[in-house]
Every structure is written in C-alpha cells, then in structure tokens.
Amino acid sequence: MRKYNVDVVYGIYDDEEKLLHAVRQAKSKHLEIFDVYSPFPVHGMDNALGLSESRLHIAGFVYGAIGTLVAFLGMTWIFTRDWPIIFGGKPYWAVPSFIPITFELTVLFSAWGMTLTFYTICGLWPGVENPQLDLRTTDDKFCLAFNTKDVSISDANSFFSESGAEEVNTKSI
Image: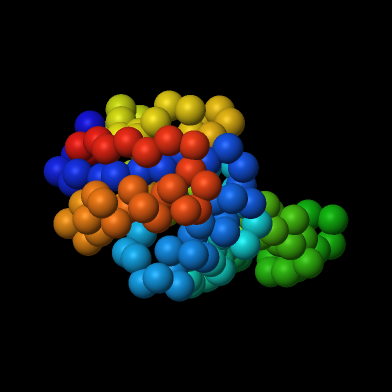
C-alpha cells in the first residue's frame, strides 16, 4: 500500500459545480491544494487546478514510430535477406504490401506503450493499493483535500464552510 505519511483535512461536496467553484476559490486565496477526488472527470478541473497538458501523446508518437520501424525493417529483412521468394511477379522489396502490417504494428506498439507508461506514472500496477480519503468519492461525492502542513485546520474549516462543503474530515494517509 502506498503511504504518503501526510495528515489531510478534506471537504465533501455533492455537486461537481460546487467542487469546481471551491477549487477556483482556493486558488484565488492561494491555498495549496493537496488533491481533488471525483467519481468522474470534471470538465474544466485541469484548468482550474493549473495542471499542464499531459505529454502522453508524445510518448504515443514515439511508441508508434518504433512500431513502424520494427514492422518495416522486419519485413524488409525477411523479404530481401532471410527468405527472398518471387511470388506473383512481385519484387523482393514490395513496399505497398508492407503497409497493412506496418499500420497494425504502429497501432499495437502505440497502444501498449501508452498503457504501460500510464500505469507506471499513475502507480496502477496490480497489487498496488492507493489510499482513499472517502469511499463515497468513487460513487457520488466529490472531495477537496488540503495538507495540514500547508493549510491550518482552522483555515481549512472556515474555507469549507464558506465554499459549501457538506462535511469536513481529517485523515492520515
């Protein structure tokens, strides 16, 4: 189980619009947000939190390029060096016939590479248990958490009461 060794104070919200408003309000007050939990992606949350765009698509391009090279160079070696057979009047190096397999390996390498990269970055490997502040955030509730080292509990409580949180709790994760 991943342990952060962090004490957090968190507020539970019943609506994503309230959560989004609370995040913007916390950012405007320069409060350091530890994390935000939601049962589904909230449109505009990345911008509100100030998160940069993911670079996973760059990794996908690199993995796809590797797949293209493996397919093209592999078929080139097979049909020109390893097993040069003339069939149907085709030349040894018939590039147009390589296109379907090259496309398939490009997609395969890209998909597997991005999946493994995403799992590695997010720590989602089998057997890993990530801590949850509140189990209701996987069903129908939204959560905004502050680290108690960055924000005092009294400041967090007053912020949650004015931002419309249903309840406020503390937990050590």
